[in-house]
Length: 273
Image (tube, rainbow, N blue to C red):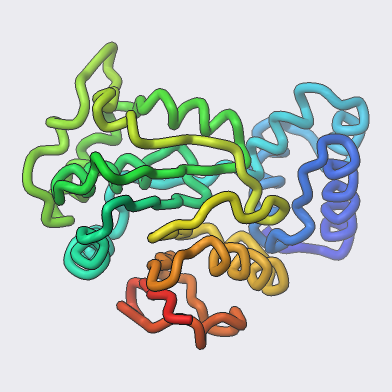
C-alpha cells in the first residue's frame, strides 16, 4: 500500500490522538511499518482512518485493540538457528564462569525467544544461576507469554529450529500437550520474569550480561533507534553482549566504538567501553 500525503497526515493525527488518550507514544516508530499495521487493522474491521479517529476519541476498547495491533511482534522459537549456535559457542561459553547471569529480552512478544534462551541455559548448565527479564509494551502478549502456551501447529517449525540450533535433546522434553496446545513445563518458566517496559519511554531498570533486542529496531526511525541504543548500552554490564536481528546493525548508532564485533552477520556485539 503506497503512502499518500493524505494517509500520512491522517496517520500523524492518529499518533497524536492515541498519545493523548492512552499515553502510548508511537512518534518514534517507522512510518511505513505503522501504516502497514494500521491498514491491516482497518481492513480487518472495515473502517477508514477517519472512522478510527472517531472511535479513539471516544476511548475504550477501540483504543486498546488498535494499540495491540501496532505493538504485537511475531516470532518463533529458535528463530535463526545459526544465531543460537553462535550464542552457545561464543556468548554462553564466556558467561558460564559468571556466578549469576541476567539476560534481558527486549520486545519479547509472546515469549518465544525467552523460552528458547531458557532451554539453551538448561542445556549448558547455567539455568539455575540465570534470570531472564522478558519485556514488552503489550500486556496482552505478556499475559500469553507468561502462560507459555503455543499452538501445536507451530511446534513442528519450532522443533526443526531447535534441532538446527545444535541442541541436545528433543524440544518435546520441554513442553506437554493439553487440548491441542503445547504448554512449556513450569521448571522452564520459573526463572523468567515477564513485565511491561516501553523501549521508547522507559529507562534502565537493571544491569545485564546479555541483551537480546532482535527484530525490534526495524520498527523505529533513526532518531528513536539512537535513543534505544543508548538505553541498551547503559543497561549492559561491561563486557556484556548485545544481540540484534539480522537486518539490524550498530552502525550509525553512535555507540559502535563502544563494542567489538563477535559476529557481523548475526549482529552479536560485546561491550568493551
